[in-house]
Length: 432
Image (tube, rainbow, N blue to C red; front, side):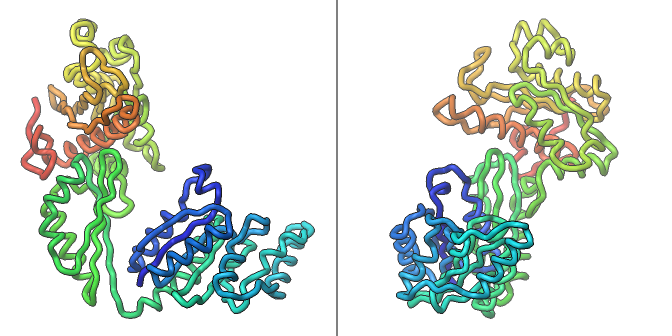
């Protein structure tokens, strides 16, 4: 079953509001097993809506429209669907009564304009809205079926979850689809795809790569009568090929994995940050209960504070500058000792837009000071840097956080921390 999504609203078209509805719908439809063939955003114009729906019906069996069902005169989805169906808009008395009751319960007087939400194309099906006023609509057209939903996210999701997704599931019939998302860190998308070629070659299996700074999620989709078993085989092969590059699955975040590994060892970590300016500590404190394993952090952005707060030797800073592997090591050891943590995790580098201390943009050093180890582990990740230094700053900082968390994860697991071992999990290189 092919499905296309049309989201309506000037605020989406002009970027005033992020189009979260399209993202949620895409994930939900894919998880259901539908083939999402397209997604388009249009403004609050009658012609634009009708043109988008007409085009979508040429390519898909089902079209889902969000937005344009409210009470104001720029809410035109009802009119567009009536025009496509060649029918008039009619006032539904039950919907009108529901609107009046809702207004009375809220202690408000229903203005005449609000009754537009009780109008629907003649013959359209009504999709109950348990979370708001405007109902959803089901309109059967010659090319397929159109589901029209409110643009308010929680209302759209409520109608989709309670009515539309069950209907689409019934339409799919016996077709079976199973999905699993693996999470990886520190390896480029192209390298993952090359490594997973045998999984791609499996009949009935499809892979999708979803990159973000420093990480790539790999969605494995299996289809057919034995989809769950096929998925198990594909996932097992992918994990075997990637080794510890895979840090988790589904909604398991990297910081959650790190906290779990620390808790299993009754250990804590403290952070020392320069170029990331607190982003590493923020990510480690994003989940509830993080105080059990996160001792605290020092943001030593100014070079002199690396000496004053973390004990980095002044002569080292004078000779090499703030961006140097030995500086990262001293920062890690210093923050561990001063905050009384089991592990010290430090980052220093050049986020841009300009070079620093003779180091180019994208130079990053990450260090981990371990219990019982004289010398911290220091690594310099190979970060892809945009040609424009002005555009590099944000991604470099985000990637640095990911690489730092992943290095700590690997040390906690005792796998693949050598300069070339970070990819597929060769034996760990012992430090100091």
